[in-house]
Image (cartoon, rainbow, N blue to C red; front, side, top):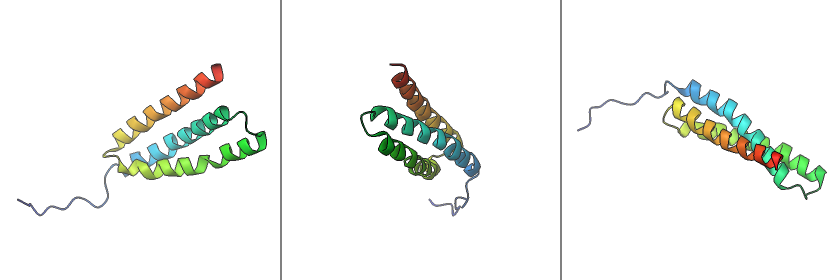
Amino acid sequence: MATGKKPPLIQRDWASKTLAGVLLGFTLAIACSGLFSHLNADMALAVRAQLAMWMVAPIWLGTLSVCYFFRSGWLAWLWLGGVNLLALAALTMLRLF
């Protein structure tokens, strides 16, 4: 049976989701740019550098947009932090080998 309660229009943890999207989204975008640059070493440097530079903003803003779909700010930090760790680990492995 319906109780008639409406959920709040603004969630309490929007600030933590926003911070997760801004901070972790930026580091994820930089890591993806680095991965792209290392994996396409045979591409001309001018083209590769421009593509790597211009792909940061769409990845960053896409991550910022997606972070609001998490149920809580804690989950946003957890998942985006895990994806960041994986991306930075892959970038580190590429640079070492």
